[in-house]
Image (cartoon, rainbow over all chains, first blue to last red; front, side, top):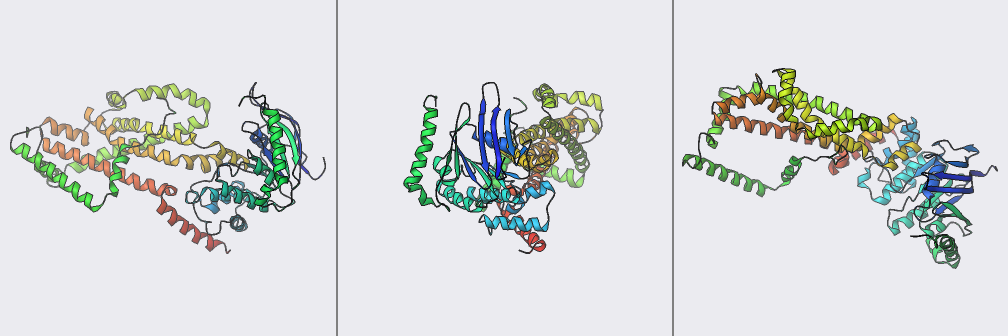
Length: 257
Length: 291
């Protein structure tokens, strides 16, 4: 495995019950510093694949390597973000960002300073001491992003992080997310069911199809960076959208909705 | 009904909604109150109702003065009942919360506990009163035991409901951060469950007096229950009513106290307390860190 490959799966399989196969025969490599979008309809196993990589659930079969070592459980170089912000209501924003340090017993003045900086990086100056219930949905997800950055993880697994937000907030946060993870050391896997979002964000788009969950296609997205919202109206972008749709359509046509 | 049912919410909480009423409403309620008292008084004086069974408001006021000031005997009995109720409530809550935590942490234990809880729930708790008096004697213990039994259920059910209400994603977050079971319990499960647990504790405190009183009615040497039983048996109805009003008043005061504590503990559910806390924590942070 080459040095610049961070995550590698081969014949990866996850079976929940006899009839439910969430991930089947997944083969992929994810290079360091890349942004991978995992797109597919609900129930296609994309969240399961993400949780396999994170070590939250165990694979049934196959190989799954992160930095050349078998995934056996949650690890400190992998951080997660969810569709819900999952903030602790009884803690201020900055105390929520400090949660990873508290759990690892690494709270220090430096850690607190870092938490402060992370909140500012995600655009939450003046809201450091607000409680989650005083923040909007978008701001709550910003706190969750700051908390993810605070973990120091360089592999970021995002499970539809802005999926519950309105269109405008989601677009803005996507652009800001791209800036923040635009670092040759940070590898990002982003789960979404929104085709445009997947293409807009990704260096590569993995298209997944359900029953059983398979990676049906891996598409390189060769669009200029930094990406801006008006990119979505270009013919090149539309061609990628069509390509993803074709992959999904060819796999879904003989399946009941 | 099963032990997984919804958290119980107190009726008194609904009544407490009136506290936000304006000065006009206060005047209106005062007028209505005095009109009702006047009608009651007149009904008695004109012989419309039997003064022996339903005493006049003025007689009740006189009795309140008597039992609190001239005779002053009510204080002792109040203290006895208060002690029994609070001690019983404490025991009931500790056992209830303890069993609930064990039931949530261990599926095996929960399955084991379930049928017994259903039996306990189906039994009217005060029906156990005579048995408890036989078991624990005529003194304080039987009253404490019945108060504990009456108080046990709400904290138990609410703690289970609260702890099971932690979202799957929260667990995933904690696990992805490498949290230990102890950290998950104290930093995630307990604070998440706290609002529901507190609602259970409020209900328990509200029912504690009832448990102690019923045990006293059955047999006791001291306490508000036996005092009221004596008054009614000698047809001293004004004093019986004065005693009843006392119990209502202290029940209400206790509930309000619980509400105040509740609000302070659950500061993140109150807008003004959150604002205050934010300011305090900001000052503390900047004292420690210069940014």
